[in-house]
Image: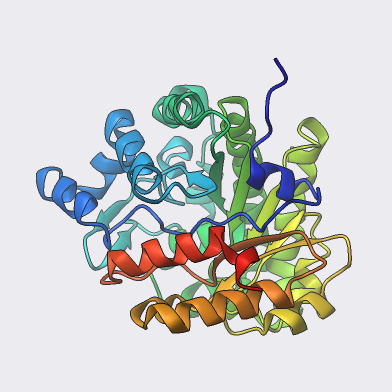
Length: 348
């Protein structure tokens, strides 16, 4: 029997497909009642994301509800950090806290080599179970944080509005920051390999805060380390598609296209047609419906999905939001997004 390759994986590998596959960033999460009910029983985010049974159950919730073309591991970009010796906590409605923040040479010198088999075995277990459960009905996605964004959390010690502390390090102690970014790039490349070995068929890199950099500083502190990750992964896994997402990336698209990834995930601040014009022809695109649109009517959701898909025609396109789905989004509107996405050919 010939194994059927799932739709999203075929699209991500550049094949001509019958329709754009559809999934959503943060599709497992607070907008779903079933998730909120589980959160009430298990209030700690790290428990939910680092317990294999809970992470698996949460990852599968949107699959059971909506049958998206991609099922993404429920985890966090900071999850691998304890494996290099950096502890963190995630406080509900406040975000991550790293105490003490990583700001000195001695702290960076003390960072450990990541060994995911030992420090992240639950990630491997969840990915294996997801592959077994969804079979060829959906593509299993892994994900990681990219070096600049992880460094920003580590140096700032929490989320930030202006990134003053890491930018001070970048402009006063660049050697120190480059040392940290190198260590993170190598760790993340190892972590991606571990995810692929355990069942991830596509992996998305989130460099969420790289959009806070000027283009010249992106070229210095973000892009080289994205490339370092991609190059190491592609040596061993040349056929595994990699997606790059940066929030607020309108000024960086051409630079993103030169990192070696296969697909650029556009945020909603870029017109899809203009984004496609600015990217190299061989690259796939993902996105980029405004997540705020899902607070609107089914009619406006339908019209924007049709507009997005039309503008991406001729490209390998994965339909997604331009950012994660927002807490408080009506669950029925998420259902509308998936249903329209799957039937978009009838609407064009």
